[in-house]
Length: 497
Image (tube, rainbow, N blue to C red):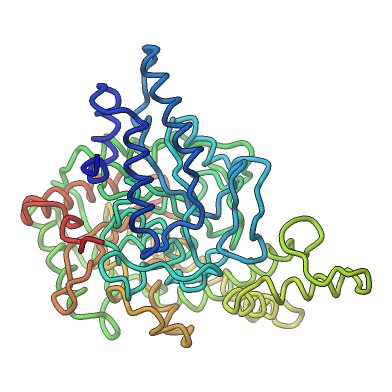
């Protein structure tokens, strides 16, 4: 059944619905693949063999009873280990939550189960989603299936690597500063950051509450759209949830027509620091959009150059507040509780042992930025920059339907290359951060391989808030044209594990 792992999610669901294959056979094929290759990749922190097969059997029973199956029934999925899952560990890639089993499901987890998606397990990630390489996980780094000596992106590198390694056809990530799109770009997969508030954050362990957004990941634009529709929608349990209809993203993905659309190329996302092969593939993608009938114009968003410093004040500030809950008193790791120490001492010892270096760095940065005497100078100023970035987006979208840019300035860099240089690491999110600060929607999809290293390059598409369907319309058209040009999907070129 090894050919089943190469099916798209849409093909898998169709084959199950027609009775050509059972959901159990599909689940077992992917579990076998995980068992065979994940020791090399380290995409998964926890694999739920029994739970996945039980969910698959339930889908087969449902079909046997004559019940109608949903568009993703029986399709396996890899879930980033930052969403709570009842009866399954949720660690956020941190020692401080090692072994914690939540008593409830996140809303997103529940919606996946309601859609009869088969959750294979939980994927590796930078600790508490803080990082761009998945090297900050307390459980070891994940390798990029294109080259296991290189990073798979972060913080959701486990989810992206699971897709690229054909361990799952669908995955879930979260995007705080690019953590869905950047892993997608460097692994040759598709990742979408939906409009902030359009996918529930209830049960998503918070890093930076005004930036965090769960979203879909897959190997094709259509599969990503199908997953998007399954997880999106209003949730009264999330105070930031938008009470509005979900855009028709599946229909948009099937349109594959950009004629008459105006595409804006962001002037600020180019220049020094961008790899030559990345810019070559991006410029070819822009030319392809022209050939497909879109009008392409250059757009200037001058405040985007301030996005990174603003982000690295806002995100750590919110993290210092959110991570205060990990105090060794209620759940997770507890160190030094031998009856001789105070609660404050136990908390300090637990945090020292449980948090990694990057998490500590951001907590210290955020606490400093929020401290008396510095709040207005740092955090307050960053919020003003955030407003300027939103205004730049508004001005741009007054004249164009979507914006495009490279997703990342470079292809996947070697593991360890930037581990001791946080500023160099942070530059991986240079193009993705503005969308998180503004809260609009963005997608990364593969647009070829860089000639220098034969590694994937990502094309980023950015749309206004609640216009997520535009991402899929443009992405679907580009994907179809590139597949026709190459004669196959990009991931068929990925080296076999």
